[in-house]
Amino acid sequence: MCLTAGTLIVLFVAYLLLWTGVRADRAMDGEVARLHERWSAPAAPPQATGPAPPAPATAPDPPASLAEGRAFAEMYVPRFGADWNKPVLEGTGPEPLKKGLGHYPRSARPGETGNFAVAGHRRTYGDPFKDVPELRPGDAVIIKDAVAWYTYTVRAEPLRVLPTETGVVDPVPQGSPFSAPGRYLTLTTCEPEWGHSHRLVVWAELTGTRPAAQGPPGGLPR
Image (tube, rainbow, N blue to C red; front, side, top):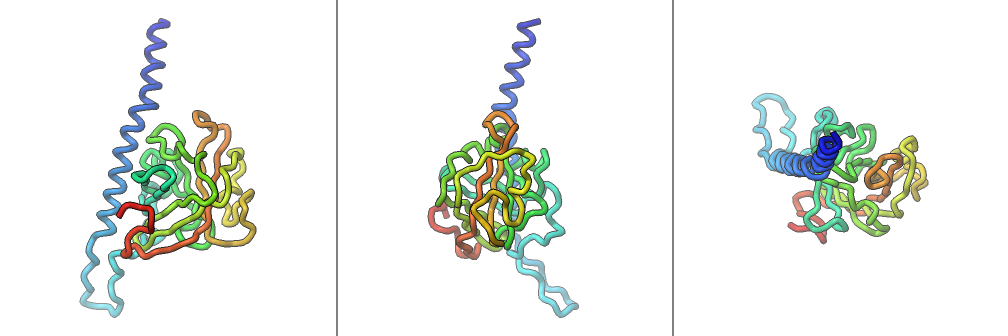
């Protein structure tokens, strides 16, 4: 019985460490590929009737299209490596977080006034936010959607908070270095590394916007 129990425990740990990561990496690659395909799709042909021209192919997803689990942006963090990029999906439930990073539904969209808040697993499901503790003031977090690149600059060291401290994703985040409305980014992940008794929070501020057609900002592969 002890051998059987030990074997099951080892298999479960292997599943958490390896298989969930393999599945998550495949899922994230698929979400990114679908995003690129959607963004590169040709514009709809003009309608025979009606005075309004069709929306351009690079128009952002309208709010109604942000259904739970729908990817709408990519995140790049140079601090995490030149090849680190993850899809951002709507929602922070279990399913979206198995396929990438999750956008807090009532928070701002990229580039908007307010707080664009994003959650991600620190361990399991691809470990997307494993290196969040390494972020330092001055580091860049870059978001791309259908219309633009948005560069956010980290303004504070990662902060350890309780899960009940939900004000960290407010439009002017509580506990942050910000005291007035602006264009902010909040990243949240579990703390400690293999637990979830607390959260790690990182805040950044929008410092640059660049049209998607001009290519990525400096420091990212083209």
